[in-house]
Length: 444
Image (cartoon, rainbow, N blue to C red; front, side, top):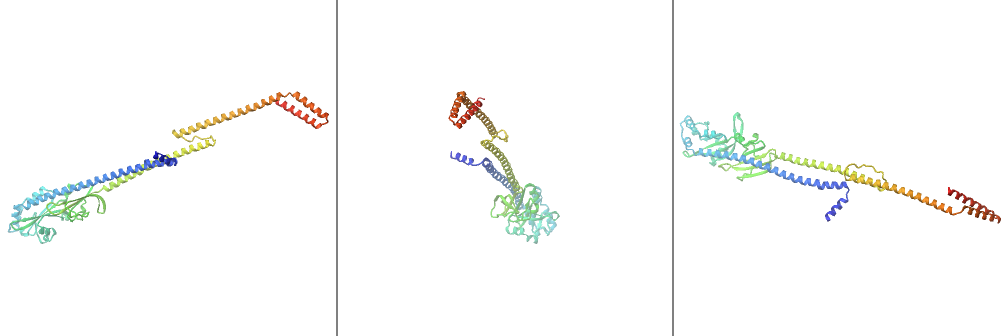
């Protein structure tokens, strides 16, 4: 009850225009802003989560491809490192390079590996120069020269005596250089107590074919080495586009990130490289996610502004139209209150205000008729009153006998004349003439 009273008091103290604008704000503007804000936040969150999920799925796909590829390369490494036939070939002391090449030519395991796995772009086995009896490579066998001994990967292979992964720069046809992921395997030779180093390179074309991505930017690097795989081939060889967390074997992060100076929705995953202590870092970022979200945000904003503008404009126009009609009705009623019944039918339509104005006109017509009837009645009453006065005069006149009155006055006049009082006689004579004149006119 108190709330209803407050509501009535609030609206009763404002004109109709302000009441309509208050209703617009309370029933349209605020609900649209609240509902639109909730829908926008829900949609923004849902779209962002979808892009995060897609980015994470893409990063997981890349990780799966790299896992399967590295596992296969590790299987080849294990099969070759335990191949006794290869041990015997590398342990023999060949008389010359021709004998060495003939013996090594019979080893076909490398050909089979390349034929069965398109993921390998190159396969090299670095052995001591004394095995080849020459300082130039032959087929898959490469001599360990002084230049090779000073390379970082060979230094690491000699010191760790284990397998590891590194990014390597390779020169292809036409002296075109590009980066690849290399797997370095320590191959022991028990007969001589020495070792060889097997280097297998992962084909970027193979990775590109498996990781089809038109809407994502993908980068992959091992440890803190340069990027060996990128959907933008020109970016390979550069540093990883995000800070790398090297202390975790498994690491996953998905969300809004800063990549190469631009905000993007991306997913970063770190996985341990197969049979090594190395880590491979992967980032997959959605290229158009934030721009699409911005378009959605702009669409929501424009839709909200458009709907509120249209509804606000309609309310404003209707408020002015309604207020004008009420003001016209008010002025008409004010004229009627001041007995000015000449009002013009300026309210058109077929609603309640038109009906009220029509009722006002009907009331004015009735007032006109009533006033005319009252005026006519007053005239008739005045005529009747005049007739009554005339009849009363006639009655009074008829009650007096004119002859008796004239004789009496004449007698008095003669007596006054006899007494010598001429003034009284003259006055009585004039009185008789006046009465005769009055009586004669009353009769006519």
